[in-house]
Length: 114
Length: 114
Image 1 (tube, rainbow over the protein chains, first blue to last red):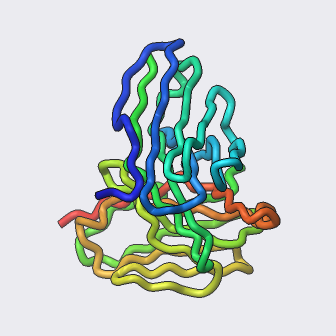
Image 2 (image 1 turned 90 degrees about the vertical axis):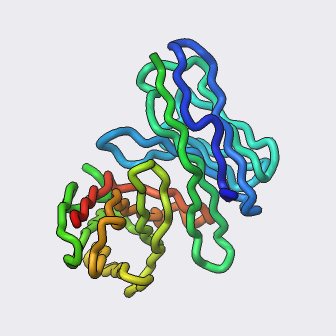
Image 3 (image 1 turned 60 degrees about the vertical axis):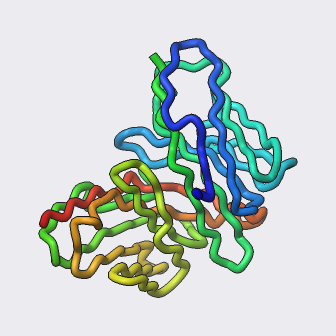
């Protein structure tokens, strides 16, 4: 079974709709991240969380919100989706203990906003 | 100006060839990551480097901190190596709070033909 899972894997929605993307992990990591990937651009950080009570904005947080319901769960919401939020969204986890802070990515959610 | 530049953007090789992908960055970093994104979209971490060289199977990653440059080499390339290879750097000014904000390059698309 995958260590980092995302639901849904694909979603098509309309402008103005509220959308929630969910991420779950079984790695026991405190740190979780949400990124978006657009064609021709690198991955960009939306929000990150170092534990349940520590949530921080990334470089492109406008139009998004997050909820860290538990250590294992980190959800991303689009309050009122707009077409330029069409992108591939990735959740990731990491654990800095041991000195090698490798990031583990989920499979991605392809979101299309019409 | 992009903080992380990768070259080439696209690379086509014949099976068995030696591959080199380059990454240059313009900011102070604490570490550099190489990631592999499969055609299906999934992302896997290959290496994390803060100095020197690391090797895993046919993959070798090197970093020169003074020159702000890293290379990813693939020996005896194979069609299954076809993927997008992404360089990402951890910005050093985030270290004071233990974060590791990653800045990503746009990726190098590698195609290895049989």
